[in-house]
Length: 99
Image (cartoon, rainbow, N blue to C red; front, side, top):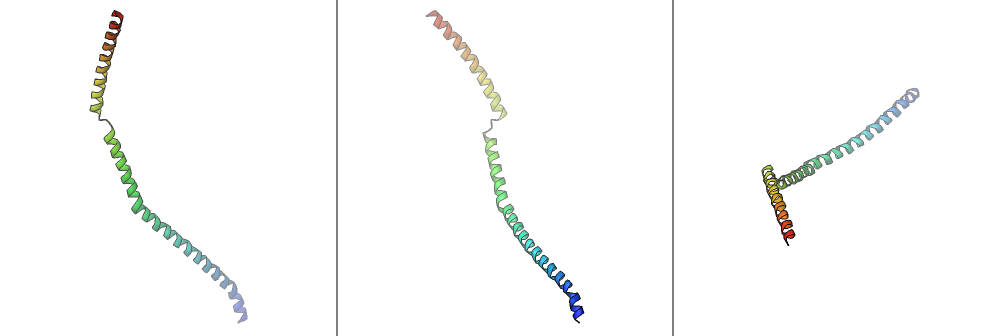
C-alpha cells in the first residue's frame, strides 16, 4: 500500500500544478473579459460621439467653403476692380503732373 502511495505522489504533484495553472488561466480569462466589457462600453458610448463631432466639424467646414460659382463671381469682380484702380491711378498721376 505504501508503494502505491509513493507512486501516486508525483501524480498528485502534477495534478496540483495543473490546478494552479487552471486557476491562473481562469484569472487571466476573467481579466480579459473585463477588458472586453470595457471596450464594448467604450465602443457603444464614446465612438459614436466622436464620429458625430467629426461629422459636425466637416459640415461646418463645407458650409464655410465658397461655392465655385461664388468664387468665379468674385474673380470677375476683382478683375473689374483691378482695372478700375489702374485707370484711376493713371488719372491721378496725370492730374498730379498737370498741377
